[in-house]
Image 1 (tube, rainbow, N blue to C red):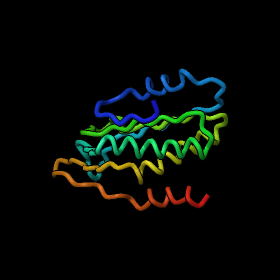
Image 2 (cartoon, rainbow, N blue to C red):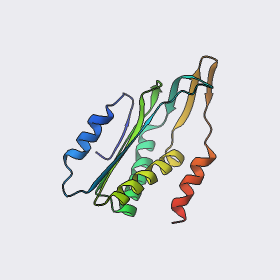
Image 3 (cartoon, rainbow, N blue to C red):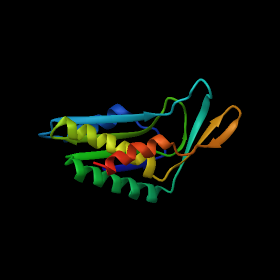
Image 4 (tube, rainbow, N blue to C red):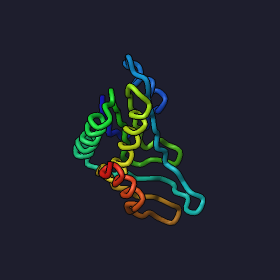
Length: 150
């Protein structure tokens, strides 16, 4: 249970409770859940995430292992959905466990920064006016760069 790339929805609270269930001697746990948002300027009706599941799973696992090693995490688990998602639904969840809070927070942030830039997903937004592919955001690449400089 390290990386799950799934099509169905999941319960973020239940996933975190299950993740914590086996934790012993851990001082900190961090969880981040990304949710499909719809802005008022351009309301989306759905978000389509496409991927080749085996490739996505392998790439995310490599990112996860890197975070565990770099921050001495006791554990890290990532759930990432693909398929058609509706506003308000969870897209993904990153969970980390560490002896101290700094490592747990840094590990979660590192995972998010790398997932935004390196996980092989293609994103399309559907609106009342049609659909369009979402291009990478420069700010995500900048956020990722900070980990290469430290």
